Length: 349
Image (tube, rainbow, N blue to C red):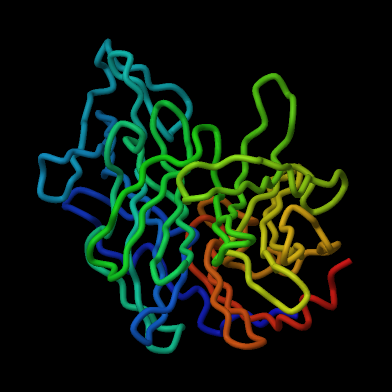
């Protein structure tokens, strides 16, 4: 069913240049994928952190006044205004929350889809009050001659879905937050259906315990204003996708329906990939679904890393019957695998 690239992992944190002096690239995660000018491109999520010391705690912050757009905040551990608990991911200083790592998006390109060159600086970083903790996990959809980027915008206010668009990958138009917190995993359909744009997204389980971590579908007249929200795909107790599910890349049109590669996680936070088939004319209607995962973390680089037992995709490229899936493994490295569209469809129930 799945053919992992022999060259996996394709990209490692150690081979990526930090955005500025004093930073370390902690991990690479979940790239969007697209074709442009005859090449295969990835838009990586690059997570960086400042070099830490025994006497200080440091955070990477977005700072539009600097050349890199970033700056490092350092505070001594004995500072009375510092609240630094057991969670190494962040701290609070004078009531303001900071993260020790920050994510940006960075382009990589390849002639063969396997050997990638990576830009030596960020392509896109957070901007404005809704992206102060960075931008993450971008999905890319080509619609009517323009590329649309949907990504997770993170700040102290929570995480929601931001959107940008571009035609040339040099100039970007920012469209703001199109789905408010708490929401992520947004993938746009590549064409209109009955005059409307459609999107998959994932609201998060509320603090009251109501609802679930399920995939929803919505439609819009203009890609900005979204409504008619419908819960599409629920978690399944006792299965590989028992606790949460989320969309991958843009759905792929097939003769049998829209095929979506999605991720699911179980009670042990083990992430796998499966597929769901949606009606071509009514994408709120599920036709079939994976009973067993298409890809699960079994290779060493998928089982061990920054956060082990994870395979997670935002990026799929179609070439006839072949689907090339670019995925993050163990929240640390970037990998690739190929699938047969026909074989996937035959496994769905």
